[in-house]
Length: 188
Image 1 (cartoon, rainbow, N blue to C red):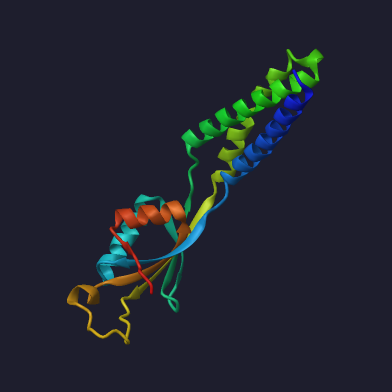
Image 2 (tube, rainbow, N blue to C red):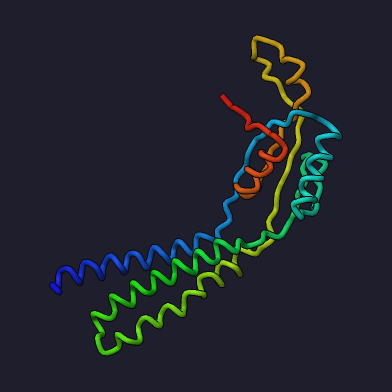
């Protein structure tokens, strides 16, 4: 083969390998966000629904701050078996591509280089160990505050709503929103 083709393919393979390493590392990153959600009810019923939801999701109360009206829950995040297998498969493909490129450079060792693929389960193991961690959800419940500058008075429906300020992993926020039929606060 031509040297220019081999060198450009080697460069692309090296870039792919670097990208794969960063992708595997990013799979364990915590993606914490804060969301303001509007709940269709207030008071004890809302608090009971929230408590039931978090107990079903294997969270427990860690702290309660009466001054801020904030509750902190903690639970253990379970790693995804699918993602562990997927990352292992990606690592195997990446290592085989790297082995192919190295076999052109080191032709004497070409028959042994595909053995690099046996290192691919390390990617799944890395994800499994790093993603199984305790995660916190901070929940603050406030009564619905109506904008005093608004020209019209709120309807009775709006008066019975609450504002939830939740800081949690983005997947947990989406599941909370879906399960309790919460709506994101439209600011502006």
